[in-house]
Length: 258
Image (cartoon, rainbow, N blue to C red; front, side, top):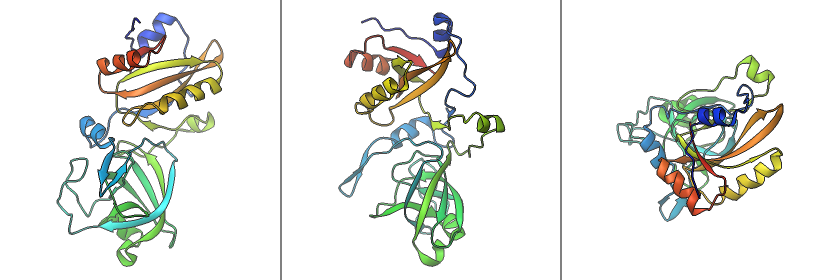
C-alpha cells in the first residue's frame, strides 16, 4: 500500500476543500509547558508501583474526578519530581497518578468549600482512594495542613501550565474545549459525513493504542456540511506513524503533521 505524507495545509490545498477552522476544529496546546516533550511522553507511559499498574490518560478541559486529597511537604522539598523539576513545597503544584504533566487543576475541598488551583508536575499519591497529593502551599490553601486529608473534586482547567479562558465568540459558538496534544505526527484512519461512523471508528482504534497515542475526532465544514475525520495522534516520528498504517492495513490511511 502506498503511503502519502501530507501536512495539514498540504492536504487542504491538494483536496481543494474549503475547510472552516473557526468554531469547528478543537483547540489544543502543542507546547508541553515546563515539562520537556520527551519527558512528557515518558510520563504518559504505563508504569507499575507496589505491584499495581497505572495507565496515564489524556483529558480535556472540564473533566472531573472525585476522591481523597492529601499533601506532601518538607520530606520531599528539593527532590526531583516526575517531570524533572525540583519539588517546591511553597509552589502550588500537585501529584496525580494518571493526568498529564502541566495540567492545570482546580481542587475543591468538599468538606469546607475552599479551593485552590495547582499544576500537575509529579506522580502519586500511591495510596488507595487518594486522587491527588497537593504541595504544602496548595494544601494549606484548602485546609489540608489541619486535617491531613479531605474529600475533594478535581476539575481540569487547562494544559501546559495555562488556564483555558474561552473568548465570548467561542462561548457563543460553543467551541470544543482544548485537549492536550504532544506530537506532530498522526494518521488519518477515516473520514465520515455522519458522526456515528467516526465514533465507531474512534472506539475501534482506541482499543488498539495506548498513551501517549490517542484517537480524536476533528470536525470540519466541507461544502456546507460537517465532515468528521478520525485521527490517531501521538506518534513520535514519521516512520512510527507509517508502521502503524502498514501493521493495521489501513486502506486510504495517510500521515498528517500538525
